[in-house]
Length: 80
Length: 238
Image (cartoon, rainbow over all chains, first blue to last red; front, side, top):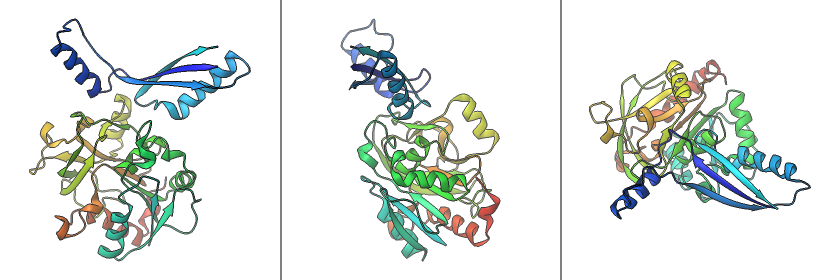
């Protein structure tokens, strides 16, 4: 199974990289850009008996290591 | 008293901490390898600066799972003194021994300069030799030192007086230009509720002798020595 995991800074946490990208886009003329938030994208291949089993394991991995709950939120998509 | 300095792969300030303690303060100090289990009688454990595990994923995220950290967490829970400097501070936050997190500097630049810290609280083993409002001149050198905590956590930090040092200018005033990384409320270092775990971004070990530009860093280490000599660490159980 392949899982796509997205980790992003929580609302309210300063994202200076996102801000820098936003300013760059503005200076290139993309005035319609209102906000940019930067995050991390991970692809994890794993073996699991079922979709639910994979979901439980991925959630555990995110809570334990892949995301820091103080500053980050995560979501994931499972592809079979 | 006995000090232990942890060496993670990618640590780079462990020798500075060792030299400062051994040569400037004549302390008994030993290195602790990250793969070992914590053993022996220690009074204070230092997590030094550097880039443990290459700072991969997040600063300190992987180091917190190294074998020695399980012992450090246990040691801290029993009231043992733990000091985290720079990357050590990041590791203690990741391990849940200190509240909050350290994120990318607001400027996006690595900062390497002298800063002034104002001592905010003195009823801890790490600041007990200082005076409230006293200024300490220490160097910072980091790319991810912007302290963040959720509003409820910040409120708790203020109420329990866990903010031990803040970035200020040479006159002791907080200001955006005196804050090297954009930390919330100019926070440079915090302790846990039990007051036996302290983390800060600036480097006291690099301000341990005049040749290095100042001796203000000794205030932190000598506070710990004074607290242990008086047996006061028992007054700050975890």
